[in-house]
Image (cartoon, rainbow, N blue to C red; front, side, top):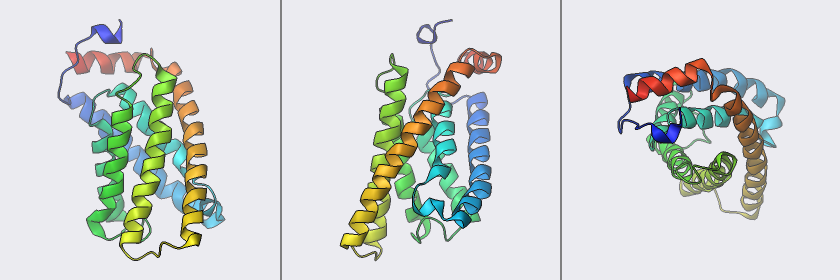
Length: 198
């Protein structure tokens, strides 16, 4: 069945909410396990390779629950879980201000995923690269607002982060594209699409 010929419900169905919750839970557990392990090696100071899997999971989730707002909800819920489990995470940004870069990231991803619907790879690449780029700027902006000096060293660090973030997101986009080609016509994917329109 052609996806464009199926009329989707404008709201989130129970099945979509359950699927979205499951993906957020898996992403959070992955972060709790992989984050500390990779941080101990020091590699995350150079490149955030721990973000490859989460970005893949977000993009696949958005393709399966293909509605604007999916990734905004994803990022907000993930952020609340992260605040409760790891209050000192995200560079010392206080309390609910941590949700600002996450909401901005989700909004940019959702907005980009509304474009190029007939060109899957371009759609994923735009969301991954632009979303990651904006996320780095918002995150750094909030840290500067709360006391980080806007020094030459910080500017150089931001530039390095942006470049490595683009590299990580391009890798994640390619993996998401390959994964999606495998699951797009799978049985559980077809059932999810049927349930969300029934």
